[in-house]
Amino acid sequence: MIKFLDLKALNHRFETEFKNEFEIFLRSGTYILGEHVTFFEKEFANYCGTKYCIGVSSGLDALQLIFEAYKVLGILKKGDEVIVPANTYIASVLAISNAGLKPVLVEPDIETFNINPNEVLKAITSKTKAILGVHLYGQLYNVEALETISKQHNLLLIEDAAQAHGAKFVDGRKAGNLSHASAFSFYPTKNLGALGDAGAITTNDFELSEVIFKLRNYGRITTYENNLKGFNCRLDELQATFLRIKLKYLDKDNKKRKAVATYYQEHINSKSIVLPAFQDLNQHVFHLFVIRSNRRNELKDYLYKNGIETLIHYPIPIHKQLAYKDISNCVLPLTEQIHIEVLSLPLNTALTKNQISNIVSVINMF
Image 1 (tube, rainbow, N blue to C red):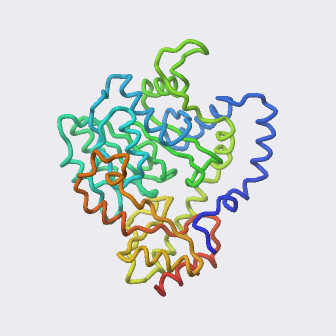
Image 2: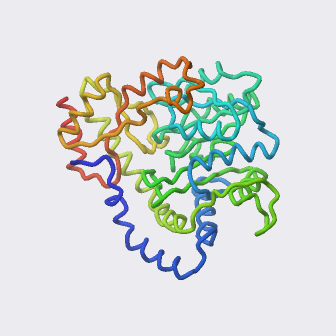
Image 3: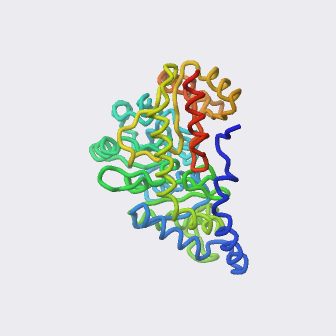
């Protein structure tokens, strides 16, 4: 069976470095917010091209802390509307509602799966204060369009870059440096994945970064002096240690992902399948390779019977989740179509050439 993702195989090549650094970590006696968190924050900010990086406990916490910090700064307030793509993972929307803000779901571009700027324009009201753009599956959203809209309507532009580590816009800026603030996840399956939960926020805004640094650690400025009502959302020192190792290989790994995606794109020719749309390889790091088929479930079963594991990202749209039953009456036909048609193929750096070729051959016989 070709697994969709074998994390053990994926991390095997880092094992010696992991063990060596773990020994140093263990002997250090500093296990919370030590030097590795500080070093990683500097290194990841430098990688993304931003002035500041704040390491936090997860991608969801990263997003929520951004919204909470803007509330502290008086830029957002409870009940403000945030426009967000309807076909994203639920974490994007949870961050908005958990912060006491109102998510406004809009349809994506069915070709790229990313938020449709025209739908964003239609959704703007007097209560709209921010756009949460998601670089879904690893492809940058329409950067130029969203930047223009946010400036013209005086809106915050926030990136959910949880799946887009290293994606680069045409002007050289990377994901994490395309907005007022950006949230990353380092969940183990991500292109830059930890060995547990982890996340980060990048920004060029000093005031915002200072508030987030406080909020992630109980809102405190000294051990027992708290200026804000904060959270416990710190990046774990050990995870920072592992992330520092893997960051060195990220660009090389993304290059491998692009090579696999290009092979799929050039060799999959089944008429039952719609391949993902992208024009610029630099703007896509292929966290996922997502195809569409109106025979999705049949295709998934066929592939499994032929030794290929696939996944569905995501089977139930947010407005159809029980957690968001209050917006279940949203009319989002494209989003609903996407959720019943998408299927993610195996794509990772542990795949062999024979496995990749086999996946294509089996698909083309469907």
